[in-house]
Image (tube, rainbow over all chains, first blue to last red; front, side, top):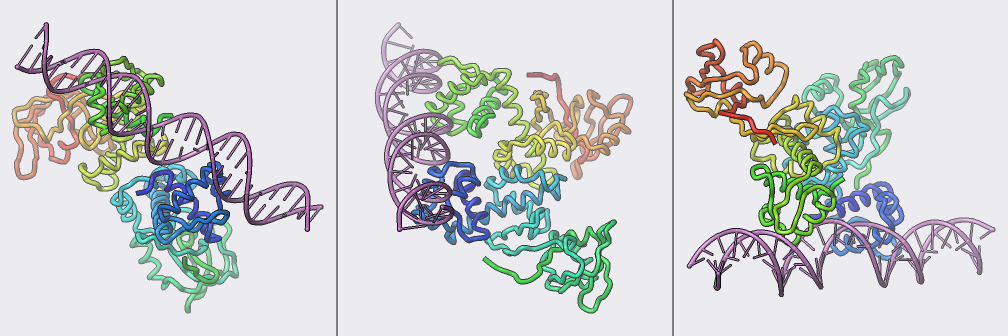
Length: 223
Length: 223
DNA sequence: ATATAAAGTTAGAATATTCTAACAAAATTA
DNA sequence: TAATTTTGTTAGAATATTCTAACTTTATAT
């Protein structure tokens, strides 16, 4: 089991790696607000523990094992954020610091319960994907449908909630994953969006619905 | 702000003090599973920090400041237990270890929210009192009404929930705090209890209601 | 291409928390 | 009360995490 501290390093490496696939000591130092020599020694330690690949003067990369353990911390963080927003009524801007602390709780049951109560969400309140129990996550830059512009053609990739009645609503509208959607227009006063998909023309979707629909403009990339 | 570790010592001192008003090094050592010399040095540290009164070879006592800080940790622990049981569906026997970790979270808003969502509970799922925001708590051994025996005469001291509709229900029955209640009989098949109080004879209270009513057999003691 | 800047490393020290070994005081028991 | 047991203390060392100061390597910019 990793310590609190090690978990914070792993998480930082994970986050920095998100784009480039690796992280360097200097950025870690700034992000964690810990001096470079300290980070440096921790890199050796994590390397010894088989969590990262580390060679002097080179950026570090997570091993398979490190990747998985980091993903589990991110998972706990994002599930917690989702829980705080959905079940406790916090604003999306209030949950980070609390989740930062709760992510270190050791109790699979606790997070499994959160997951269940939330209906197994795929993303957190900020739209970031939540890794599954095996550490896998859809590594894609999704956009909310209500953030698209008229004329955009997008692909329905995920929902932020998988509650029964929302999914039923989508079924009745023939809105399934991978559906190609074209944004026709957006009402400025209430955000209602007019879209086209399949054989359907001039379908209206409320802003509340569009806020729960995540779309991609192009491809999907996996880790 | 106290460290994680200091908080655990404070909490242990608080719990051991509950009965005798003081705690000794040996008991702390056993309870915390930390060797005596370590406990000894921590006692000096907590004493320096003005949280306990410590003199060599004597049991330690919490100062006003220490008492308050310990109470706040206990408060967070018990609120958490209550939340886990009431809002997340855990059993009373599953919550201790999780609460043990969450009690160290630094976020007044988080616990205030729990408190609010729970309807400002006065006790935790095990019947232990939850200290209020000022660290004050009713230091009494309450019993649930549904754990009394026929013939018992008891005093209504607290409710485990103060949700609106439950309190309204109690009002319509003239059941107020400090009411003297006599237990007449208990149905074995569903736990329904027949009681007498004020001018009322033969009042029936469901087991669900009686589970939320805490009573004392005699006096109240304060810290 | 050399000088300067940025990034990374090593060595040594500080703090927090823990331990073991040895000793001392207090309490208990014979 | 003297012997024994329990409890408490001191001293010194180990581990984890952090720091500063000095030095080295790599990257950047004249």
